[in-house]
Structures are given as C-alpha cells and as structure tokens.
Image 1 (cartoon, rainbow, N blue to C red):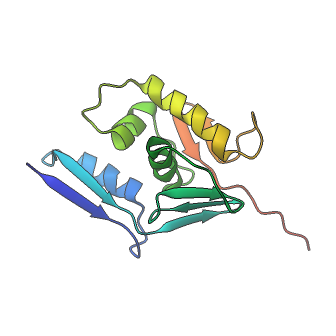
Image 2 (cartoon, helix red, strand yellow; image 1 turned 180 degrees about the vertical axis):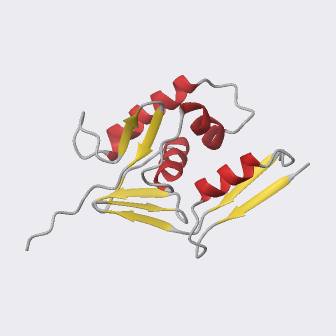
Image 3 (cartoon, rainbow, N blue to C red; image 1 turned 90 degrees about the vertical axis):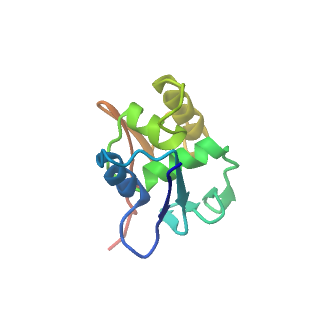
Length: 143
C-alpha cells in the first residue's frame, strides 16, 4: 500500500498545487493521501485554520462539516485558480469516490450559505465557466 503525506507551510506552495503536481505524475498511484495542514489562511473577514480544521467569519466559528471545511481549504489554498467539478471531487472526496460532481455543487451551495456574508451574493466562492474558484474580497482603503 502506498501512503503519501503532503506537508505544507513555509514552502510558499499551496497543498492544492502539490496535489496537482502529484496527480500529474502517472507513476504515482497512492492508495492513501494524507494532507498535513499547518497553515492558517487569512482573508478579509475570513480565517481558515488548517491546524484546527475550523473556519471563522468575522471571528465567529462557521461550524462547517468535515467535507465543507476540506472543500473551502482546497479552494482557498489557491485563490483565483478555477477547478473543475471532477478535479474538486477527486481532491476533496478522493479518487475512488462513487459520488458524482452533483455532490460538489450541493456542497458548494451549503458552504456558501455558511461562508458568504450575504445570501445570493457570493464574495469568496465564485462560479466560473467549467468550475469554481476562491476569491479574496478587496479591502477598501481611504486616501
């Protein structure tokens, strides 16, 4: 059995990029991939703690399910990068999942209800042609 542990933090590369690199290597077909998250991702109004496995909006715990957290951490790990539903499914649920991309859309919807400040107006989790991406909102500054 092949077990691969991916550690992040201090290297400047997101675990999403590492997963993409790993998937690109055809000779590497692990049975288990363990993501060892150490870093906290911070965005205006949103903090995603990899060590705690929790996310906070404006300091309040969002009470995400395990899959919601994994999906948020996956997208936020590469802000601005669009991921197709199938790529998200394999990265978050695993390559051997029997789920369909419909579960990704449903989980995105549930996640948006908890993460987004206003219903129906996504700020963080955006839809793009062919997939989804995480966007960090702009901070308004006054001169």
